[in-house]
Length: 181
Image 1 (cartoon, rainbow, N blue to C red):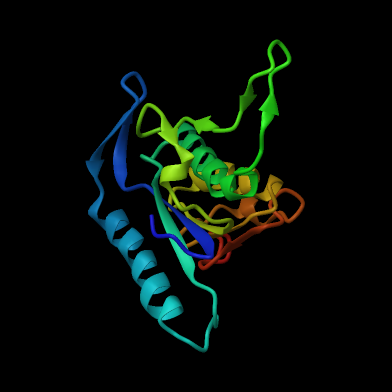
Image 2 (image 1 turned 180 degrees about the horizontal axis):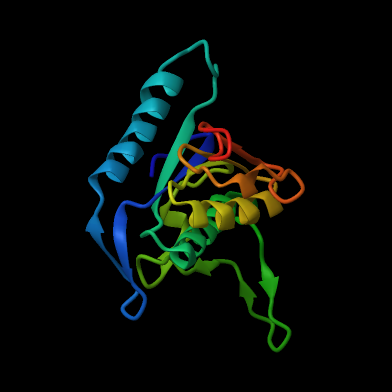
């Protein structure tokens, strides 16, 4: 993760296997790792270092490993999006109905570690999602991000179902659907 004024999250199938019982990713896919590195390079070098492109705005990034699993992709993306919106709720306090205690520090689950205190991170609002390469993951995440009003751009999805703007109003692709190829 790299902090910025705004955030782009990249969803890549860096791990090609997911053990549902142990909830662990394995078998690194070097092509997907290279695509994630290309995203980081593009944001850092081609966007942030160009003073004419977005003057006064830095773009941060977060890389998410979907582990080639729809369930893991949604889980990781949901956690990451929740964390990216925390800056809007840092001063939020909740009063417990059964006592007069006030909760001033919110704790959120991080999929990779048991518990994470949000104050250790510098998250910013997410403005878009890049990925995934696997069609069934992309269809599910595009429906999810679209329901949140967040744009998603896929670099490899060919599923024609993603053309339906009624269901995927915030989805875009850099490659044509399979029906046109």
